[in-house]
Image (cartoon, rainbow, N blue to C red; front, side, top):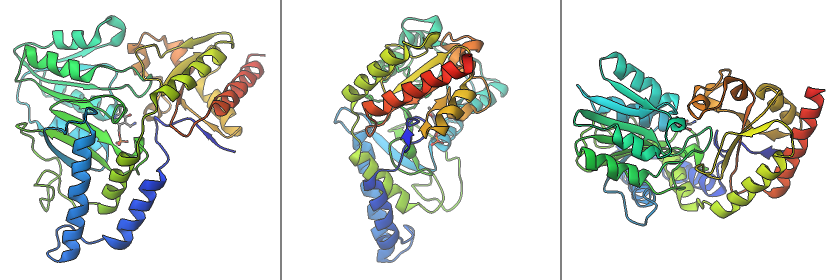
Length: 366
Ligand code: PMP
């Protein structure tokens, strides 16, 4: 038996993706740069996938007004977006809840002389308003995530984008939308997404670039993808990504039901504190169980074939600094667990998780 509740870390590739990858490997494996018709066939697969991605990202039915390039994942998309802007001066407004693939690049920009303002959700009731308020005439960039990977905390990206542009139309807005892609409406100058969080494979992601935004490539070479991202296009992974986008169906109502069940049942265990609130998407639930360190709990659950995460899969072994920005104490962060759903999960699985959680708490606290 396996109960997989770690979908914010990665998702199982869907059948549509697996079929599309296999089919592209067998049928359209030509190099998209080749002059013969096998090259043309691969170009067609890539072009169609780009159209699908451009149509899907806004979540409003309106296509994105710009282009999209394929990358190896959101880490590369974030690096390309932030480093590719070649900012010479100006303030950067960001948050203290960003993923390391964004935060480390911002750190580097700070070290090179940029003023960086980092805002924490715990300090504001209206977070979008606070981010927009921090923008002034000298602000070159706003970069923040749509949905936080540790708690599910979610911002209104469309509102943020409009508010920033109203304050300074020259400020470039970058959104790390890895956990929000196909789940919430999106609009920005630059948007990073990743395949493996929406049931496509690892090794494929994308960066959306709004019309008029000038960006230089991070990866130089043969000049593929309009010189924006060199390297032979992984046509198989791109076909799989498109298939996963087409197949994706965000079942918000179902996640709300699973979340309520989890919250109700877990609340019966003493010493539980929820780190995800109503501003969070319902597919991610973060909570701390006092007295049981995350690692102990994870291993106990693993023995029963149940897979969840500590605060974040990307900060393995470290107490999450991100939870602190949500007002979680170090002690609670040490005991933080993240349950993240996909459409395959069931109420029975949540019940089994809670049963095992309660058993472990009893055994460890004894
Ligand atoms: N940003 C966020 C919010 C993420 O959750 C992740 C993946 N954990 C990334 C960026 C990095 O994405 P990738 O694994 O595709 O490099």
